[in-house]
Amino acid sequence: MKLEDLLNRIPVLETLGDTNREVSALTFDSRKAVENSLYVAIKGTVSNGHDFIKAAIEKGANVIVCEEFPNEIIEDITYLKVKDASKTLGHLASNFYGNPSSKLNLIGITGTNGKTSTTTLLFDVFKILGFKSALISTVEYRIDDEIIPSTHTTPDVIRLNQILAKAVESGCEYAFMEVSSHGIHQQRTEGLQFKIAGFTNITHDHLDYHKTFAEYLNTKKRFFDDLNSDAIAITNVDDRNGNVMLQNTKATKKTYALKTMADFHGKITEVDFNGMLLNFNGKEFWTTVTGKFNAYNLLLAYAVAIECGFHEDDILPAMSQLKRVKGRFETVKSDGGVFFVVDYAHTPDALENVLDSINEIRTKNERLITVFGCGGDRDATKRPEMGRIATRKSTLAIITSDNPRTENPGDIIKEIEAGVEPQYFSKYTSIPDRREAIKMAIKFAEPKDIIVVAGKGHETYQEINGVKNHFDDTETIIELARLMSK
Ligand SMILES: CC(=O)N[C@H]1[C@@H](OP(=O)(O)OP(=O)(O)OC[C@H]2O[C@@H](n3ccc(=O)[nH]c3=O)[C@H](O)[C@@H]2O)O[C@H](CO)[C@@H](O)[C@@H]1O[C@H](C)C(=O)N[C@@H](C)C(=O)N[C@H](CCC(=O)O)C(=O)O
Ligand SMILES: Nc1ncnc2c1ncn2[C@@H]1O[C@H](COP(=O)(O)OP(=O)(O)OP(=O)(O)O)[C@@H](O)[C@H]1O
Ligand SMILES: N[C@H](CCC[C@H](N)C(=O)O)C(=O)O
Ligand SMILES: [Mg+2]
Image 1 (cartoon, rainbow, N blue to C red):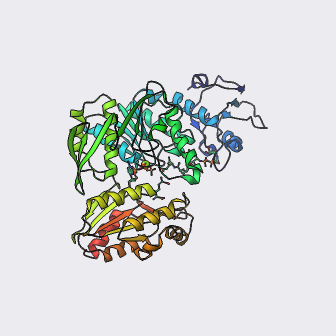
Image 2: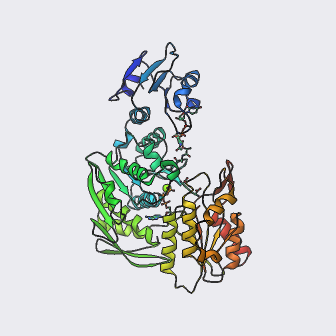
Image 3: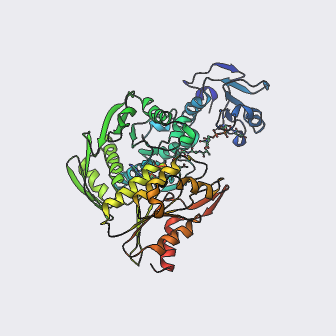
């Protein structure tokens, strides 16, 4: 593509060198620069991309976009100075890939919990309705039936535009994507044109990165602040910060709730391990997707589908056919009658919701055993809170490991234990090896008891010191339950 076309509507403060040249590719990583590519120097969390300008040129980049010109200016290279390189990258990526986000209906979902669930439910509903869509999620990226492995919940803006361009080319009319707070903060969604933005909820997570809850909240809000006036913003007004999200948006505002008045109002009529009987805006339907929190995800998906122009008489029957989302309140019943719930709850709020959902369903004759841990190199303040919640809400909590990464598993466990209240000291035990922890839960369980294995959901690995060893909660449960004939 011609550099002059690529720069269409992008403000440049100062130019050195010739702008009449072809650009073969875009990159923000010097190691991935190729012949005649354009390298954008970004100030990151660990290093500064400006230090790699020379390395990018050595690999073939001949256009450099940066916030400060380097000391050494090389002949035949074009240097463009911009105010904000990250922001500029977003607009360059959109231009380079032909502005794909404006050629389909892009729907972004943000919030602490429920993004993967809601986007996946939407992708599945639209498939049932007969539409081809793209999905960008923590679990996987999809272009209709094609599955692309996921690296980030919200990938970088070049990758995003690549996927969206491919989706447009494949005839997708919709794209459902998760918008993480890291993604917003690092401007990975810059330049994308969202048709609808949805908010699930906001609770404690990622304070290692955002430092304070106020900053985390503000980052999420920025996604709505940046929407165009022709977009639609849908928020959960049962969440105490639901309205905050829409304070400064130019988009049309819509609300959904189970507890309060809202444009989209839902009610749970019945809920058990097999599914839920729900009532959305006065119409009842049954779904096998269960767990109280999933009523919120389904309601947001319903609101999005209505705002896309579909009729409730088409949406609700499609919702009745939905399957559960991988690793989100997935249930397994062993031959011995023990009930397992595998769930990706890795935040205090998510764990509380899962345990509350089960406690509302169970008759209390059965015991609830919770196996969980907390990730290493992630927000450590979640740890004591999760320890407190698990012991408060279960008959027995077994504290174990969940991706220790570079941390010592024993130290993480100690931080979780520190949150257990004295009256519950007898309600927990700690077993660092996750397989052994699940084994202990099964040994302890009697028919009809419920074992929740939380934190890893769909994950198929346990990450220790940069190595991802195969580990799958569901697989381990099935194997151990069979071996132990429970
Ligand atoms: C903390 C964080 O989010 N880091 C992301 C960030 O990297 P960074 O800012 O640390 O990059 P850096 O190492 O400081 O480098 C700065 C710049 O120099 C460039 N560089 C660096 C070295 C070199 O030799 N040459 C070079 O050009 C880098 O490409 C970069 O542009 O930008 C990179 C490119 O987009 C991301 O891949 C990277 O994600 C890391 C791997 C990551 O683990 N991120 C997680 C925390 C994340 O983003 N998670 C969220 C939310 C998860 C959820 O709760 O769902 C997600 O959306 O996945
Ligand atoms: N609407 C919701 N409200 C509260 N908790 C939820 C909700 N939806 C899901 N959860 C809980 O959060 C867990 C993670 O759900 P999901 O993967 O959909 O969230 P996410 O926002 O994509 O998370 P991540 O930040 O890891 O991408 C679920 O396993 C469940 O325990
Ligand atoms: N996207 C989240 C997922 C956490 C999942 C949990 N299993 C862990 O490793 O902490 C994160 O990277 O913080
Ligand atoms: Mg997710």
